[in-house]
Amino acid sequence: MNSEHETHHVHYGLIFATLCLLTGLSIISDVVHIESKTLVVVIVMAIAVAKASFVALFFMHLKFERNWKYVLLGPTTILAIGLPLALLPDISIHYYRIDIPQTQVTAQAEAGSTPAHSEGSHHEGSHHE
Amino acid sequence: MSHASPQPAVKMGLAIPNSKLGMWLFLGTEIMFFTAFIGSYIVLRIGSPGWPTDPADTHINVFFGGFNTFVLLTSSFLVVSAHEAMRHEKYAKARKLILATLLLGVLFLGIKGIEYYGKISHDLLPSHVAETDQQAMNKALAEIEAIVVDRYDALVPKGNNIDDKRTNLTTMIGKADEAAKPPLEALSALDTQFRSLKSHVKADVALEMPLTLRPVVLLTGSGRTITGTVDDAKQADPGTLLITTTGGKTERVPLANVKERRAGTPLPTLSFETFKSHLEEMRENESYGPLLAGVHHPHPVLYGNLFVSIYFLLTGFHALHVIIGLILFAIVLSLGDRLDGSWIDYIENCGLYWHFVDLVWIFLFPLLYIV
Image (tube, rainbow over all chains, first blue to last red; front, side):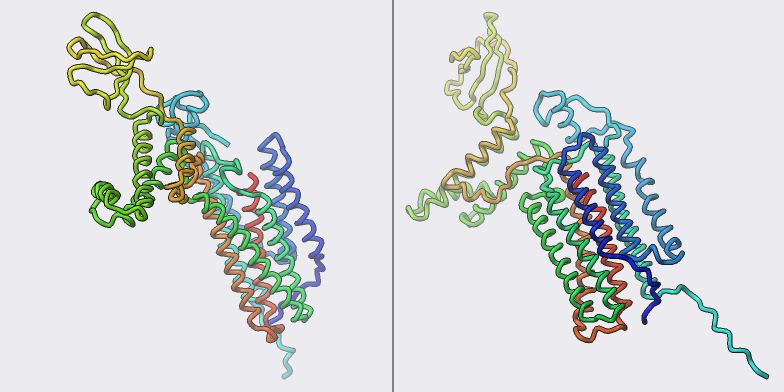
């Protein structure tokens, strides 16, 4: 059965060209040496959000749908953001020293000495980027 | 009694087809599915004290990923154009566009396959990645051991365990004729090298030093302190101790004169670099070198296992969703000429699903390849 389509004329080719341009920009921001890693992450994630918006709003026609889109996507968004936020304090933030072979090796490399398997100086477990 | 024209029945529900609502509800669950994995990745990465980012370690190629992004974006554009064609009742055009979308999806999977092959050939698999130098050495030793045991099973059928087989191999070499000797001798040589390497790694002694060497400090009855090394293999006379002093002289000390014997400073330890170069020398050996083809080059990657686990989880589930999308397109294409207006909702819903797959990739690409 043919559903009603409002005659919103979306120029799909234009959206596609914009998406390609944005993809090119994110590849360039990886290839070009940018000092601050944080800046690269911010640029690249902002481009990703922009591309996702274009695909969702125009290709998936969400811009022209009615209010049911909020009812549907609201809970999913809440869970999508909420679950990682809930896990963040337990998994990401360390309140204790991490003592595993990997951190021992890193500590020894920074102290600049002794063999890989012996006990070296310990680092404070901290919130790393 | 005249009736006014009947009121139209109150319309329940949304002004979209049930199938479209169903697809959107499904996509809502899929969003939660993928954000669970992506959220876990973000949380684990922030929480990890480090992360492998060097392409020499991760074998991540941003150009492959970028090209795949273009492929999926183009396929999204083509599928939305197919829907437009369906709306304008241009069914042949719609079929062509759906076919093109399917082919681009296959191209995406092909490039993903090439990337996966690169990872697998470097043994970058979850729980296979050595993270420290010591782990890398142990892993190489385990791989060589597997090859040695395999060869023993193939060439020396007699014997219940490896030690029996070792004895039997010596006998076999003694009795074999010239033509049959080379593989047996190759195995014997490889086994000797392997056991020496393994003992050195276990004792953490430099490869150049014999394992029987023991650093000692002797205190004699006359009050003299002698520092040097004692080679257990060269002690022929039980009444004396043959010691090579640190100055290089060899001295024979009667045991009766030794008041105290202490362990000296430990021997030079095994370095990872010498281990790797020794492994390369073994590979170049003419007789048993080819046997070592299955041993991966030791390349420890700190936090590599976590990275590779997440990489395969995210891209694997995404690839699975791409395959499902291709099946949906194949169903439509199997209609051939019978594609008509009744399928427009199906095409729209396929398009929605495919756009979602593209959306997930739009986030996966920067998160895995760039960040």
